[in-house]
Image (cartoon, rainbow, N blue to C red; front, side, top):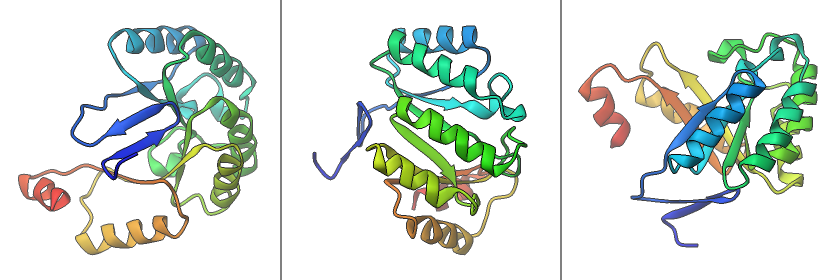
Length: 186
């Protein structure tokens, strides 16, 4: 693999190629339909948002794991990133961290990668360890979608995430101006 490539589960990402990511969530029926449609459209990578699916806020992840099993069977070529986004990081999960850790543990075997938040201090090292034990790609993310942070703050988040030794650091941001975009691309 060259320096311009990264393997994310069954998906080889190449710099300069269009790498489309589909976001899938909802009920079992909509998840499976959206995944099939994504594959038909040429999508190779999808982010599965467990926090936006079914009863994840209640800590009931058994149906989600069943759906992931079906998804693997019906769309074997689709690489899956799984996350259970916390409410404080603009997700929908409001349960306990113990329940969230348990859910990650059950989901990881059916995923190619996990995305865990930088601020998930209580469970991030354990989730990363579980993913590593099963040969999964690890993404550490931070979300700041309302105010564009300073370059210094972006550097602090990237450095903190880097200390966790992920395969990929993801900063999800919302630039409001051309200058914001130029600063991010510099």
